[in-house]
Length: 263
Image 1 (cartoon, helix red, strand yellow):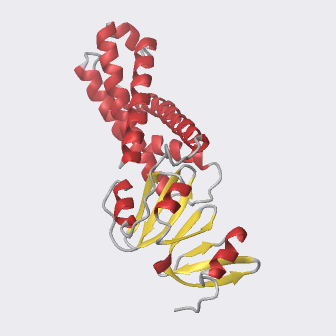
Image 2 (cartoon, rainbow, N blue to C red):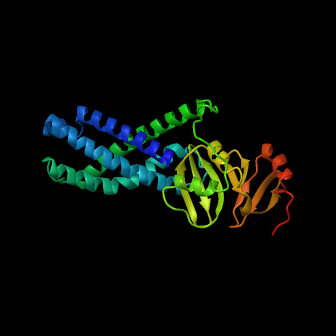
Image 3 (cartoon, rainbow, N blue to C red):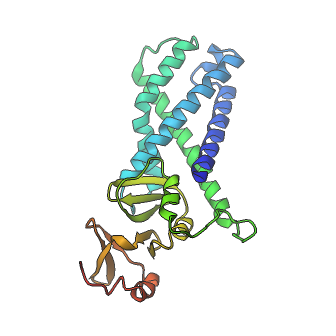
């Protein structure tokens, strides 16, 4: 919950800053068409609504992309902006009418303008999030001032579920790292959250093991392990195969994950 609130504040601050800059610049003819206060209101509304919309769509798109996809941090925002530009065009058209600019005569031109605007907004938002993650990663964690309090307890999964945007169903399977996002996989589906893998692994340490730089697996989800050449994979109860990093193999042998028989 705390991570979601922090992320909301970061995005809101970024969107308001973008709206303020756009109001000062007055692109797409708004500088000449609107007085200062109306232009400020127009761009704060348009940037905030469309920024929230494109962020939601990008997270949905990102959840569908392969984990090892090259240039993911470029592709996901662009595809998200491409899809979000359709409803966002409707938002801008309504705003134009309400603020006295006039209803658009050429929707294709308006769509291209909105797509350009959303691409700029999404790039700035994700840059802010990247900077936030870099700052968090460099902060030392001490007993006096932990970055995220970790209190191991039997109900770690119940507490961890508060991070998720929607109540998860089914059994916890694994966590997959997507840049500074984590994909939380359960038997009911997948959700993305803004969280570091190290923090998540510590919170859930009594429920599973880190098996790879980009993967954490729940103990109850493992049914066996198999090799493919020099590579080693864990097989989970849903048939998924998760790669095992070389640095984690000794620990997984110690806890019996690698040598356990298939069930």
